[in-house]
Length: 108
Length: 113
Image (cartoon, rainbow over all chains, first blue to last red; front, side):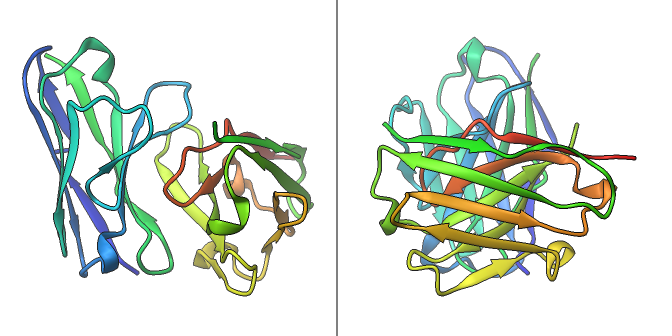
């Protein structure tokens, strides 16, 4: 099983700042099959990025994904108030699919 | 627009069974691997099972192997999860999740005596 480790566990930033979230895999992820999700309290997880760097439909361009192999990054270029949430990475390149433990992005 | 509507959740006693369904529309169902993902109250996301586009390959997380069965009916654009021998620790919101697409709203399964 591929273990995904997200860091930091909590990130405290202010609106307008840049956020950088990390997802590290215990093994190389094939075909860059890595997705990022955003989840707000009481809501369904929202797909942001798939294939490591492709934005999902309707996702603002301030969200970007990068990386390959075992190291992946989600960057939010300028934080908006609605971006404060929990973020999860998921690998779907090798069964069983797995999720990271999440990064909570909170307002400083 | 991708739409996924899960149903079949509810309250069940330990050892009982439930069958979850997911009705899909707005995308070519037969072109996507489909998964079930769950989230226990206050916890993170846990992948449960997936099924290949043609239904010929299925994978499960270890904790549900032998108890849960995933299936799909491509003629009906539907995904299913048969859950038997349910345990308290199976309590969660279950999401229908196509690979690389948005998810449904989920259905709550509560296992309790």
